[in-house]
Amino acid sequence: MGLVQAYGPDDEPIYDPRHLCHAPQERVFIDGQWREGLSARDLLDPEGTGGVAVLAEFEAQVRAYQNYRDAQGRRAFALPVAESTTAAEILALDDMSMRDYFDRAGWSSERLRWYVDYCCRDDYGCTLETTSAWAGWHYFCSRPINGEYLTWPEGNGRIVRHLMDRVGDHVRAGMLVYRLRSTSGDDNGSSAGVEADVLDTQTDTPVRYRARRAIYALPRFTAGHVIEGYPPSDPGANAFTYCPWMVANLTVDRLPDGAAWDNVLYDSPSLGYVVATHQNLRVTPGPSVLTYYRPLSIPNPEVARAWMLEQRWDDWVSMIFADLAQAHPEIESLVRHIDVMLWGHAMIRPVPGFVWGEARRRAVDPHGAIRFAHSDMSGISLFEEAQYHGVRAAEAVMDDLGHAHQSSL
Ligand SMILES: Cc1cc2nc3c(=O)[nH]c(=O)nc-3n(C[C@H](O)[C@H](O)[C@H](O)COP(=O)(O)OP(=O)(O)OC[C@H]3O[C@@H](n4cnc5c(N)ncnc54)[C@H](O)[C@@H]3O)c2cc1C
Figure (tube, rainbow, N blue to C red):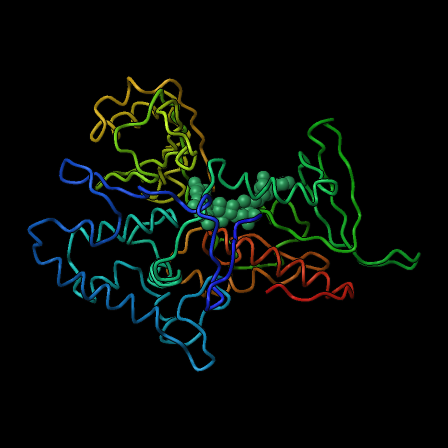
């Protein structure tokens, strides 16, 4: 994709600066004003009441987990998750919530708790109470220190275009799989494989594909509906739970003053908004799109999903304006158009016991000729995990079929 310009002395990639998130990157609206930055340290109130000592302990724990290596040299929290240590003292963190961890550590700083809760909602759609401490620490400790963001105006669309340029001839889009069946070979010489029944949504006709292998890269909750005979009496099937999200795109005549890439509101049910045009190298002010995110993390996915479906477009618009008006009293006058998207099963929830539990670990087990991919297989919803499981499943299929290849993992 032309992202890496060179490699540094430690073989670290040096990225083309056009793809790295430009400054100003992040700001938070707190105490009635915007503050640049979005780290726990940026949130401390200027008088520094007691929270400073707690923050120092929190940061020391982050460093300790970042520096941790087990006997095999594995990190405590790695990206992908599969490369993390399986040492008992680290996996034990998965049995408690991040809130339990804070309570046990005696970390009562309201702002630090808010910050970590915000991070859990941002990456997992879960709260401090519903995120496992393992997943909570993974957020802070798995990424490189001083890592940078790659981002594009069209988001993942850039990656999709890159892939389609190379393999587009082999891709059939608009095909809805409604039944997948693992077949065994028969006496007439047909070999074992899969049969996929698919609705071609362009022609509204059903199509049947036969293949020697299939990779099921759909969200996990669909598997029991699509794959015949799956899960084979799996008691953990309900362990996969998902947070619903509302995402809105606000088309504005001009950006609010001082907008950064990510603009967060302290103590809001939303995560604030990201400026979609932030990476455009435009110098004159003009129209833009603000993408506003609201994970529906409470009280639980079922109730939140039902509530979400009861809201009408104008209910969402009123909620969005009321939220943003704290920081931007003029917001209504800037907005020309609002698109609201509801995602019923937006993100897998790494609740206590899930990431290192039996159901998640066994989810990658093949079912006949079907292999499984998708970021759900990691228990956390991250691009790197989706990429890892796609490559892992593809390599497993090549192994099955005897295709020689060099592993990319
Ligand atoms: C609001 C939001 C913000 C996010 N932000 C980030 C971020 O900043 N960074 C990050 O790393 N991750 C982020 N994520 C997570 C990231 O989007 C996922 O981890 C990633 O998309 C998973 O990729 P995937 O290919 O495994 O699965 P998916 O993206 O879920 O792809 C599954 C595909 O299967 C298709 N499908 C479903 N059912 C059928 C069917 N019956 N027949 C045919 N096709 C079907 C779907 O249309 C979809 O295209 C975010 C997620 C959400 C919801």
